[in-house]
Length: 253
Length: 155
Image 1 (cartoon, rainbow over the protein chains, first blue to last red):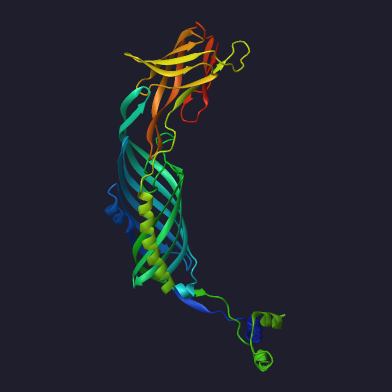
Image 2 (image 1 turned 180 degrees about the vertical axis):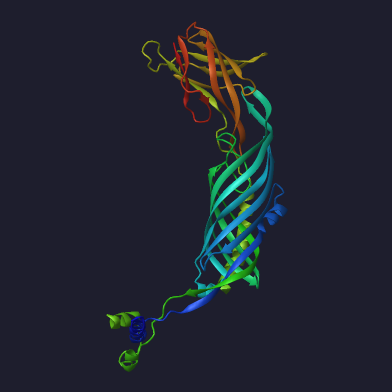
């Protein structure tokens, strides 16, 4: 009985086989990446106020999606006419990246897309030499060193390209939204490590990463199905040589 | 993919320029003076009223500081002393002098990176003489940059 059923189904496949659309596939390597930010050290050469060193790691989940995690150490100091401010701390980000490049084109080596990240900043801040002048006269005050935990969200559109085998470079813009500086309304940090100027609810900028990638797995990705011409279509090829999806569908219906 | 390469390198250059522009310090355009705002009200009716003349002076251990000297006004704004938790004012209303002692807790407040810090206060109490002032009451404890009325002065 079972044997008969199998033969029956096999026969059905043979009958339908010529009309089923075959699917093109491509093998895409999935990578593990680890890299560092170049923009922080470069900016430190230009502006001595800000030292920022970031590392980022990512794992491809599939041909489009990867998960990122990063850490950054930031030290900021500023001395202007009426106050001096220092903050330093470490921030962490985690979230997905979505690659818009088609797998057949990207081959796991190119990225153009965007990412969303949640950020957490552990930092200290203090302000010294706060000078005030008003009708009462002049005075000096200070804010002692205090520890805070800040939260922010990050949207990062960007591109990445393989420089040579195993080494990738790429940059991304970032749009950060401050969820909480953790320091209260009055003592928002002039610079929150990992976020930026916390007196503003939105921070923008860019990062430039060099990363090293190792392929850890290859997956078969089905790319857009291509209809295959059937025997009947071949016979009718003189009248209708091109086989379009609609003609196949029409044939099936 | 050459396009992506070009975009990547151009973007890096653009990024550097943008970062340099964003590093330039701006001027301070924000209000940094936290003022205690007081409304003058008619005793009995509670309606807004104007003084015939109004002088408000702050008292320091060694001197007085002139804040208000006007002929007719229905409200006045004065800063609290950011160096002390108590400020004493002489309020000369229609030629009659009263003394008001305001107590508060100060805290620094960051206005912006460009402007730096100012001091905001939470009013904790007040005392006044009653030569012309009938009642001086706290409406809003927070003396900050939002411009809201803090005191009602009935006379």
